[in-house]
Image (cartoon, rainbow, N blue to C red; front, side):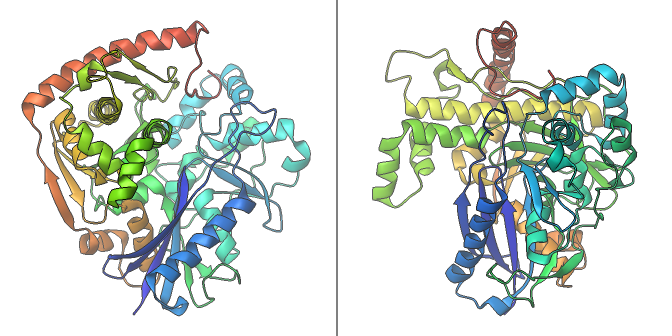
Length: 517
């Protein structure tokens, strides 16, 4: 037998997942990781390459052990990752500096660019679909300004998923879907625009080759990785775009929501479509030639759930352990008995996407009751589920307005789609049919597809999607609930505006804000 391995480097964890060539998940090993704020550097989120590589190797070895297969049966490996996170290397290919996706240290650099280069962000956005907020240019400028001795050694840059493939193969490269999130990129040409770097005064010769997803990079050369030198290393891509491919989203007009640490709402559009002039929505290259993706993002939805579980739900965790089920399953059982609207509880976490001026209110729950029969862990948990779906629906409406694409069907995947209640709530909130694929971990499947394309198992990503994606469940909206959620959503948006005013007045702290605001 022959197998494909996908390595998924997410915001909150890294996983190694083994699939057979029919797309069946054979084994998975996962390790949580955390990105720490650098001492003395506010809003920083350092990516620890040494520690995180050790965790990655642990996952590779453990997944093979759990699968019961032999190392030589892994014919190819590819990787996907949280986007925006970057790794900088010296001339020998050694890591110099790395940050995770929501590192926001470059506040002054973003302000400098906005104040001294009038119209540049808008011009760069029109080319790349990205703003300065999470782009690579301000971060590299920060390094130049604060650690010039490190900056002087920089010879190359890649994304975090690319870094995993570099560790395995020794080759530094990127793909359009991941590299495009640097903002130093052309949506139409699917290649670097190094002149962007030239214009802001940073090195313009540090950009590695751009390879399309599914291109063989080389063979495994890392002796201690758990993989053999016979295994091919294949170019992967961004987690959202490969996740979309893993959901069968390879054609124009298809829609998906990926419910992971962050939630992404994506709609496939043609590569030549211009991003909206108000910069409200992000646009990225897809893993399929000729396509881009309009994307909304809901911050921290999965991470907020993990926080809520770990901070408040010890009883449910204990019950889950005794029953041999997941704690989230226990919480969903209890939340299913809570009426639509969760007794009016309003979670204040992620705002709807405002890509040009992006910041969030202070994390909170509003409209709580002191009646324990109404306000309890179950109702608060359900309110978080409803809120993630409502913010996603708002983002999809923004994309509809920009693209003109009518949305009546949504593919839902990622960890959140495992919850039957959460899936039904999504259908009710959006008023759309929701489809759940058999393999809900679509991002890893997308990376496995890339690996399979590289070794000829599939002709293309589109071919792999047609062959492998199988639907498991469908959820149809309750239109009475849809009307209720429409009213709740309108109220929530008004309340959120008021909560932002408290941040604006300096009375509370934002959950997260883009650099330079």
